[in-house]
Length: 418
Image (cartoon, rainbow, N blue to C red; front, side):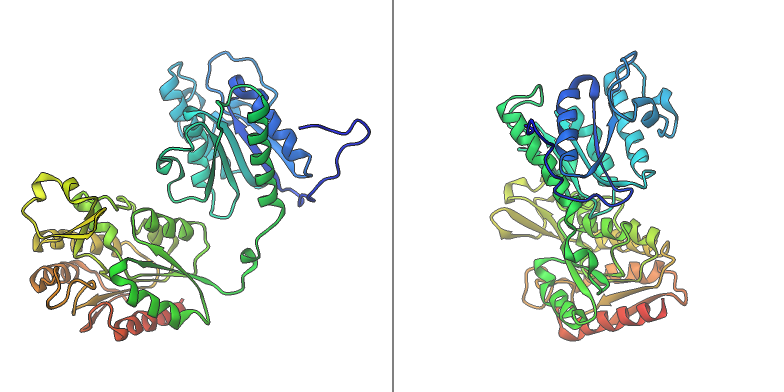
């Protein structure tokens, strides 16, 4: 980054009042790089706040505006839980403290950090905690590998550092400057989608529920911005992240297959927290049993030995499906009912009595009415109806047009009631 000897460059953007880019990281080891990010962003006209996440005991005060102790005080157990003298536990605790810290900052318009695996583990939990739409950039030495653990369901931009984040050189300055300007651009140039007038509705879909969800989206698209999420684990997490970020007006969760993967050890689980954002947000919720006839594994040879004798179906060379059994479906139904019973917002859960997926039909590989009935009976038996929480039974299969119409009618009803 260079400056004219005569005058500072004109700002590219005019930062809004109280809107700041936060540059966070371990200033005890990465001060030069982090200050370079600060200066690069500042030259665009965006206000900058620097935050030191160093965990070393007795480190001298850094040039960051916010010192480690201030962040550490946000840990639920106080600063003493962070400055333990043990690097592993200290980094974990500082990440927790920083996650709590960022949600208290009313001026935070974007967040950027840089470093290796430790710095990435420090900064990205806080990035995931921020709402969708707040710009987040992580320059990292691990960004060219599997970054799911860092990114999760959030809109984090991971930029591979190419060289180690250790000093300024012809490569690192280019990468860091690009990252800084990317963050400044995201803050300074707001997307038109952020001023969209239609409320957004989240819909969950799988290949075997596509006709249902596409029909529902077509029926709603004049009134809603329909956001469809692929129910691959991360997809469900992303949909619920939007719910937590107050960016959805409601959810049509037609495809709850991630729950089967969670309970049976499949590879497309959204975790134990699936449906918790709906509980927290009290959003209008219409759910169903889409693709609960299957658990997902990778290639056929990846299926656990305990499932070797089961009804297995090669969806493609990389994906193997296992038909859920009556016993497993009773467990799934019980799990779903327990979550639904905790929802205080308006709820309609619709049972597709004619089949839960495209391959759960007469002549198809997963047709098993006994297994489906075990699922439905478990939900019926444990579902606690209230005036706002109702169970609906449809004779249709999930991909019948009439079933999609039922989901849409239920959604419009509860939105009106809310």
